[in-house]
Image (cartoon, rainbow, N blue to C red):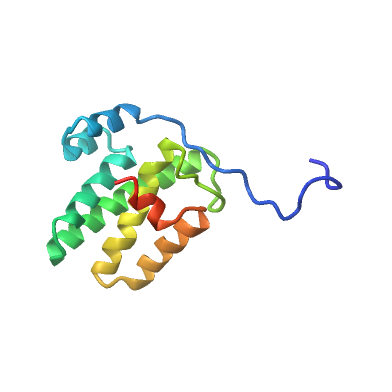
Length: 145
């Protein structure tokens, strides 16, 4: 690091998760049950995110909303674990165009949406802000569904 030439305003490098769950993504694409995949691969945020998204899409009754919240929170926390192992320190870009990052980002958006449905406004706003702070828009993540 050269303090004379380094940009002091630049932030951390983007965090790119390793592609540890490609088989889960492929199985989801072929129509396999996300609940079966989440049970077999609990560290795969994508399976949890899909469960949350499907539950949210099924209606906005309280049982569905709480269930989606639980699925999304699980995917979010499994994604945080993976991000930390990849060197993320709570800030910086988590690019949506890097496929392995998408499970975490989808779970994060679903958590924001489910939290809003159950009236947990502070959590919904924190999650939405984390998406923005990660350099991602909700629209970009919704497009992955």
